[in-house]
Image (cartoon, rainbow, N blue to C red):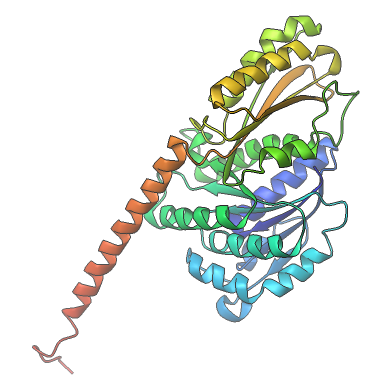
Length: 362
């Protein structure tokens, strides 16, 4: 799938960098161009492709400090300049646009839904969100921001491929190490998904192309992506059970949204050397996905690639009914209520020093 990436905010810029780098390193050519947009000039300095600083008249390049309402307002004010920059990158060959953002911060959380809305009105290709949820150990502000942003982005984009930070962050890692590892995990998964049908070694028996991805995400709402890989035998007949077990691992333990298995539609992609790919194994794994998701819209195919390993990608569309998503939205609502209570307490405390019952010293 030929795509253009737009990273909004600090997390969006870093994840877009990881995706573009993976695509270039693998030689897939699926990422045709990229742009990073931010309100903080310091966050753009390490980005290796073209960048755009917005909101200079409001925050003078210092960012919005986690205020996603301000982030949305700045994006709305500067949307014409951003669209002009993207207009030079989106061409007739573009098959999709991905707006990439961390949903818990300020610029990405607020700006991504605004940009997705405008892109959807202007371009006749799918506009997807690639959103990263904050970890459960991050503060209440990030939970509230993410809940509001996700709700809005899911409405404005054709679909939101959602990444839960808690899914891949390992204990003992520093914050920077954890985020870097998460970005690499996302880049590998999403990069392979975008590359399916773009750059192959050999001829696929059952071709997976961009239309399969688009049809799987057609239901809209929230999507997840699972991935797992394992060494493969040289003969395809010996890899039937390998493909099925790898697919189960991809969906049940390697998903961007763990426990999200109820879906409107699904796409299974099995990648590996053509001589190691078993069509029987792919079909058996596809039927398992159909049973597990309780969906009749399950597509499947192979992605020939020069590797001695077999990898399974499982894209699930319409997973917003899952317990994982519902628990997060409940957490965000509770955080919003707690924040409102703290704000009310602060206002009441201020009144103590704003009455005429006691004269001031001066």
